[in-house]
Amino acid sequence: MNNKTKIAFRTHPQVIAVVGPTASGKSALAVEIARLVGGEVVSADSRQIYVGLDIGTGKVTKKEMGGVPHHLLDVANPKRKMSVVQYEKLASRTIQDILKRGKVPIICGGTGLYVDALLTTATFPEVPPNSRLRALLEKLSTETLFKKLSKLDPARAKTIDAKNPRRLIRAIEIALALGSVPPQTTPIEQYDTLWIGLALPQDELNARITARLHSRMRRGMVAEARRLHAQGLSYKRMDSLGLEYRFLAEFLQNKISKEELLDLLDIAIRQYAKRQIVWFKKSEKIRWFKPNETKKIEQLVLRHTSSTPQRTH
Image (tube, rainbow, N blue to C red; front, side, top):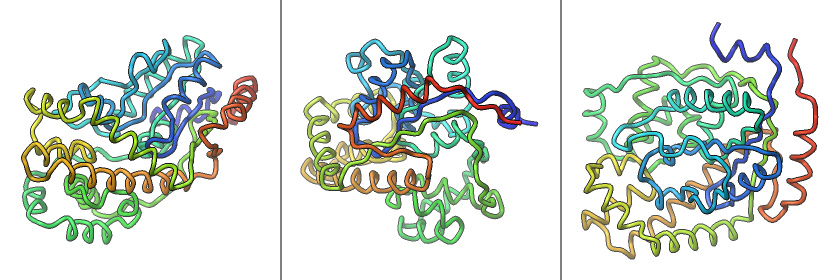
């Protein structure tokens, strides 16, 4: 019996999850909720776990934290990929520690895979890299890779970044290693989780994405990427990190102009936000709010944290 199965037979501890697309205001809301209930934030972002990936990922600053403890930020070397399995182990230990100290864990992030792995019994296989297979796949175009993945794992193809060859190759690698796509089972929740989702009309979200992108450029996003490369982060690894770092790597290699960097990145982030929405909309347990509906959210949070945790039998 694994750890996840054991948890299902205990009292379900109370946890709050703040999810939604990029630029929707999740980090700020998580801090507000933490102050309200005496909570601590656990990041569920697949790139904010890495040291030095600050401006490009929109990592919450010390000032924005407002004194609220944040966990699972800056815990991994960006030169080496952290798997979702590794993340789940670290984050689960963190949640248990927060609960033992009588605090409320607040899971905040837009990486649906990480959120599901942490809060439900959804499992993800640890498939080792296959260098021979990767060498063959790297010769193929992104379009061909996406078609291959669509045949092997249609569900994953719906949520993956179809323009990111590194992620496409990894997804194909996993599907092939398993021999077949694992049967989809309904994950069981491990905690008494209050799911809060932030959503905006598409035009408003797009405007936020564009404004935030230009703000990051002014804050030194290009300089950050240049510094990371100087510290040994290869352009190939930057490409595999996706979004900002993929296009920044191309810009630093003079493959695209600054204007193209902004245009391509703006489009890519908007597409990413749509994939995030598709992922989270699959869940019927998420209560959706607009970012300015803080009073309604606070009332819901207070009702949740004042209720008695349920027990399984």
